[in-house]
Image (spheres, rainbow, N blue to C red):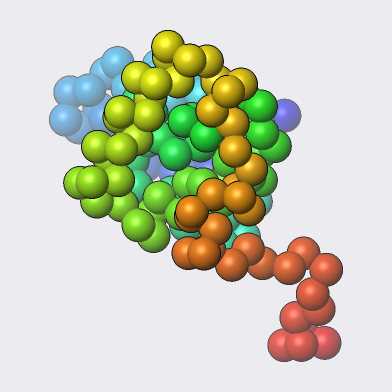
Length: 135
């Protein structure tokens, strides 16, 4: 599977900066990326693209509320909720909850997004809604 033209251009720009600043290892790291994931990110709508506003860390809301046990769209909702509410105390609670998940287990800590306290901050787009501007 090949990259879209926009992603190929982005790859060339990033590799050029990497060579310019002596970050030769970066070029090989970029090749290790899964192109399916890059194409998936390129296909995000505006709502899902919000999850890219913060850099990924070692843990997160989706990871402490059931990471591998929940569907991908639900993980995105947790990530967007974090973007909307990020701060010191939320980061501290995620860190403490991560420790709890390690000891108690992921299954016991799983909670659907709609049942979480973060659901009030996010209104997911209605996939079945017709956009009147496109008619």
